[in-house]
Image 1 (cartoon, rainbow, N blue to C red):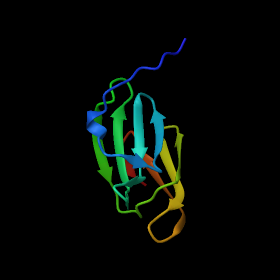
Image 2 (cartoon, one colour):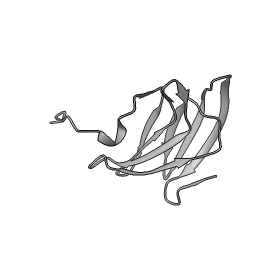
Image 3 (tube, rainbow, N blue to C red):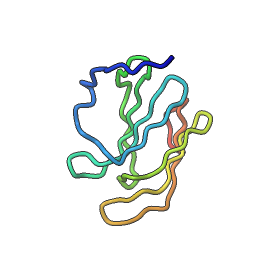
Image 4 (cartoon, rainbow, N blue to C red):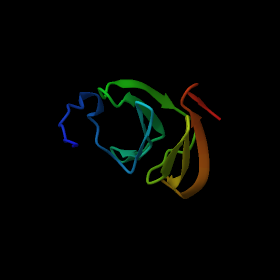
Length: 102
């Protein structure tokens, strides 16, 4: 039977919304969203077992919120969303084993 547990998220103090969260193995990936009124393209990787932040990967794509992220094998596929100025229909692929965008 599943049981909810409250955990401390000191590493994630900033309020964020419109982001996506996906898992690959024991890793959780939080991408994009809005923080303090600004769109972001941050990729936060954390371990699901202890929620300790592993790394933050910043990339040169349009910061966005309200997008979709699909975990497919060892890849994250990020599609669409909206930015400060536009509705987006682009996609980006992140390979979790090599920590590289392709």
